Every structure is written in structure tokens, then in C-alpha cells.
Amino acid sequence: MNLLSIFKKTKNENIFEIFPDGILVVSREGVIMDANSKILDILGFSKAELIGSYFSEYIQGGSVLLNKIVQSETLSVTKAITSKKEDIFVEVSASKSDDTDRVYVSIRDITKIYNVQNMINGEFEIAKKIIDEKNTYLTGISGEIFSLLNSVVNFSKALNDGVGGKLTDKQEKYVSIINKSSSDLAYDLERLFKYFEVESSLYKYEYKRVDLADLLVGIAKKYEVLFSKKRLNFSYDFSSFLTRSAYIDPNAVEAFVKALLDISMKTTSIGSISMNVGNPPLEFLESKGYDISDENIKKQYAMFEIKDSGLVIPPVVLDNIFNPYFLDETLSKKLIGIKMSFSLAHKHVKNLKGDMWVYSKPSQGTLTCILLPMEKM
Image (tube, rainbow, N blue to C red; front, side, top):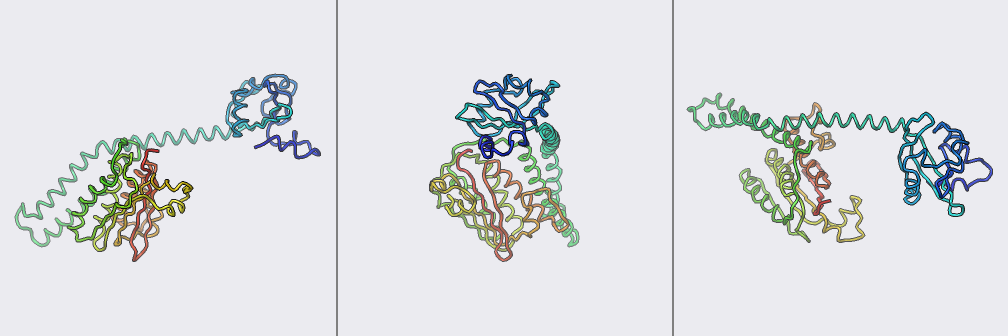
């Protein structure tokens, strides 16, 4: 706010007195030369007490703070002392008159707002601590849970394979149900525990220089075999990179790519899956609000496009696709697993300072787009 321009606008009204904030006029030496009635109410001192005293006696930071505010033309929050020797929090702005070397200082009491914000921040920190402790505990015991669950998975599989002798049709049906249900539960719990790990910063990102295309080829070749067993067509193309060298956490990249490809492995029975990664077109960056005045910006990002023609996500799920805790009565168990995988991938992408979008339409399938910085930001 340019206070000087406000006071110069009119000569017919006493802007100095009717201005809604407290005003101090301070000399180049930091001496208070004038004060309006509002500042007297805020600080509790009389006009006679303020005039002739130093600005630094009342406002923490004094002339150093004042010079910084004038030069940067920004607001600053600091402490002020009142006549009752109480600290209050104030928002300070200032403008300097080059003609007279005076500084017009606006002071607003924000103590109540500041205290409420501190209370909210405190409550947030308490809640975050509880969440972190819960996630640490669950992540810590996950190995024991999976050990018990895998016993069910492996035993039911062994029965189906004939280890205990030939099963009747009814026995085989129930054992198959037990095996599928326990396998699905293990998949969902694994995604859940991995999300807990990333959510509470238990996962430590380790950046290193890698060839991003080579990293992705290694992942794609493994899934090429897995998709082939399901008789699903899987294609990938990483040839559009202008630059392949990236300074990233390769394990995190592998984690979010696998999370997305696993969705297709678990849910798609008919259709095709493709993964194309390269430097993004300028048109895409512009559509997402990036400054494309320097066209070399596209070399600074990698764009992932993973498409599954057989996966369609309902609108209510799509609207909350990155919220792992969103539930409504329409959500099936299959969709809960999908959402957890998308949430896990999204959390990794955001922690790597990237962006992620998911589009889904009937008859077209689902397209996931990821924009990832190729250097640490």
C-alpha cells in the first residue's frame, strides 16, 4: 500500500484522522513526528508521549524493519509494546516521502487473528503428530500382518494345487474364494501401508543422477511379461526425450509407475495399456499455466502418459481420486484399491514437486498424466 499517495489525494478531508489504521509519521532518524488517534487507541499512549520518541521504542525491529518495508514495498508482521507493557502483534506497512524524508507508517492490530492462527497451527501440529505416530506404528507392524495374511494366501493356494488331496467341487470353490479374498486384502493393505509411510515422511527420498528412459525401460519390460500372461496388449515408448538425464529418486519413480500399472494388472481383463514418457509439448505446459517464453522449459520436465482402455472410473470416485480416505456407499472393494494406488502415486509425485491429472470416460478408458521435474526443485 502506498500511504503517501493516499494522503496526497485530497486536501478537503482529514485523511490522517479518518484512516482506519494507526498512522505514525517518522523522520529519517527514526523519531516519531506525528500520530493519528487510531494509533493512540492501539498503543495506549498519548500523542505527547509518542511525539519526539523513537519508533523503535514501540515497534520491534525499529528503523531496520522500516527500511526493509519501504524498500520491498511489502507488509511485515512484528510485535509492538503498549502502555500496559503488553506485547501485541501488528501488521506494518510504510511509504517514504522523497520530498520531506518522512516515512508514513500504517499499523494494524492483528493480535486476535494472530493468536487464532497460532491456535490453529498448534492444533494442526498435534493432529499431525497423532497421525505420524499412528502411521509409524502401523508401518512397523505391517511385516507381522503380512506374514499372517500370506499364510492364508499360501495355504489356500496349496490346497487348490492338491497338497491335501483332491478337493470336491464345493471345497475347491470355497478355497478359491478364500485365496482370492486374502490376495486382494494383501494387495489393498500393502498399498495402504505404503501410503502411510509416504504420508508421514517415513519414506526418505534419495536423489541421484539417472537415465530416466533406461529406468523406465527396465520397469516396462517386467510388466510386458506380466501383461502378456493376462493376454493384455501393453506398449511403451520413451523415444521422444530431448534429454534423458534426470536428478531424481529412482525408487520413488519406480514406486509410482508400478502403483499405476498395478491398477491395470488387478482390474483390467479386456483392453490395452500404454505408457509413453518424454519431454512435454509446449502446448501442454501452456495449458497448465507454465511460462513457455523459453521453449527450453520442456527439457526441464518429463511427461508421463499411462492409458488403460479397459478401465473406467465413475465420476464420484474420479472427483476424489487422490483422497484415500474418501468413501461413499457406491464404492466397491475394487474401487477402493484403485483409489489407494492413485493416492500413493500422487503423494510420491507431489513430494517430487510434480503434478498429476487423471481423466476417465466411458468407451475411452482412463488416462493418467504426470509432469515431473527432471532436476531437484
